[in-house]
Image (tube, rainbow, N blue to C red):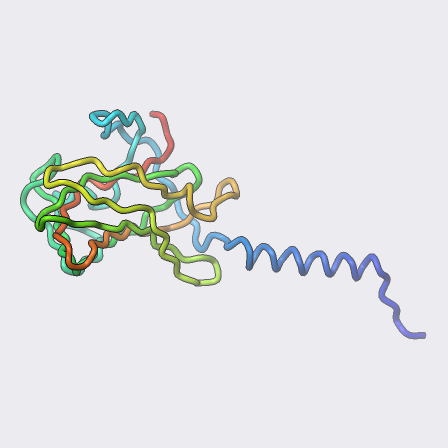
Length: 198
């Protein structure tokens, strides 16, 4: 007598396969687990932002740019709050060290100024890799500012990444990319918001 597969078992198998497909293809999973920083301080109160922020590794540039990947960018004298900042040429880029984010790390912010030229624009991207090993570059925003130090707009971070599941984390890098043929940019005090309130 041939072995018969009962319909409910087939249905369950098909449902399991479809569910696995949806989880791996339609909703990219987190590529790597990490630990999100907590705490922080209110560093942008002068512009009416009462959020608590934590400094990205090397984000003050006072000790150089440890962990940063720099192309056409150098630490220079003169900063927004200290004695140094990072200057990026129009053909350069600066990529931060890895930053651990979750839904509880919704935004980031930094201080910026146009360092040369009569006009300049700088795009800011979030670089991340999904569980399938596919690299992504998601645009967080852009700035086209003045020659004096100014707080950047609040830019989305964890709030725009596939981190819907509670407890999911993702290691990302922030990329600062001036538009070609424009002026140079200076950045300083790169902070992320861990959505903590002290």
